[in-house]
Length: 295
Image 1 (cartoon, one colour):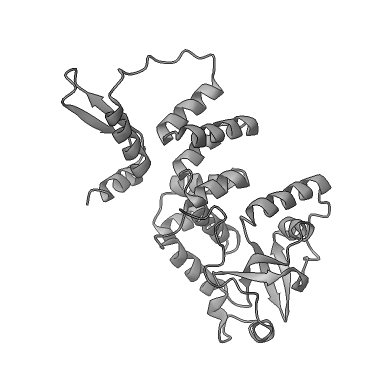
Image 2: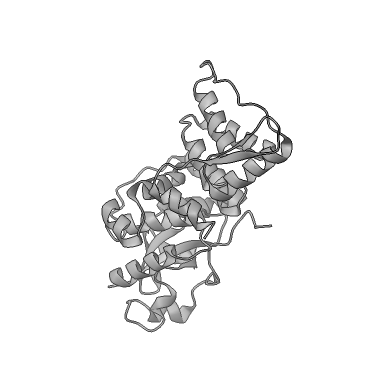
């Protein structure tokens, strides 16, 4: 079973050595490739805020809430730091940095930016997306870095990684889920399809209610979408439910929906001996994803 508090460091999670702090400052320095595009743990005492940070007010209650979340779940999204000799300046993530201090942590997971590492970083991030073991949240974080740090547009990114813009947009939207739900996607408790269904609910309480139901009732993506629609319009007349089918067909329907991450409907003839399977897809990419499972 996957660890719910998924490790961020990918084996690089040791605190940077004193030699690394002193010697590696540029992308051309030996060992720079260990930092660029990867996540490392950095001691909080070696980090200082960006003096030009536009935000000057940090809500104390919000910081304490974030600190509690970090105590429970860890840091979901690493900060980004710029190497400055043997210290590190915050590029993004000052709230997370402050919350980690409140939570009593000694280190924080971070992306390290080095002098003249732009091209190297872009190559590392694009290569990272191609890995098969990435979960949807890790992919979303990498898309975000390519957009924010490299300055790509979604159109550029679409061409660079070979994904439709709609796919990139939908993946990025997963970062709007609260940390508990993001962590559930990372640990495999729910799928990205469940996450997208949750995002159709704008009310946080309804999202949390549906999230609990997904876990308690082991809802499929399709069932989650239906439940979300009902929560949005509880008084709307629901269409007549389809003819009930035997449990083993229901199980097959759910397993296929979870595997393919699309709507699946099993239709059974009156004699219960034959039927057909209907697979819904919204675009060419979803169709190719379905076909890839049968190739």
